[in-house]
Image (cartoon, rainbow, N blue to C red; front, side, top):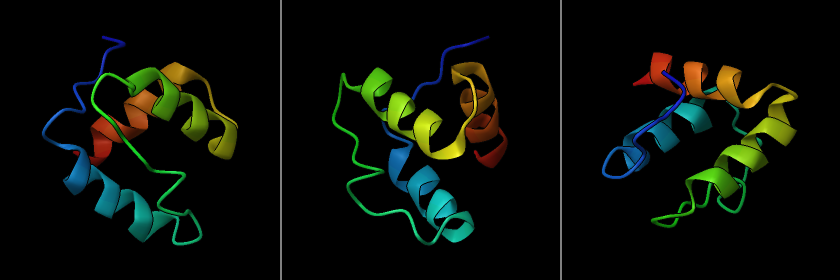
Length: 62
């Protein structure tokens, strides 16, 4: 499964991401409904990982 449902869960996941990557800013983690791909793209750049790797990582946090 390569889809992640961020809607409704993002605030919780965002807190966990910030615990692991304290240097990330709110702009790095900004999520707006319907903008999942944009957020995943920013995270891919920061982590140097593929889209699937980022999704798997986020799923492991949830």
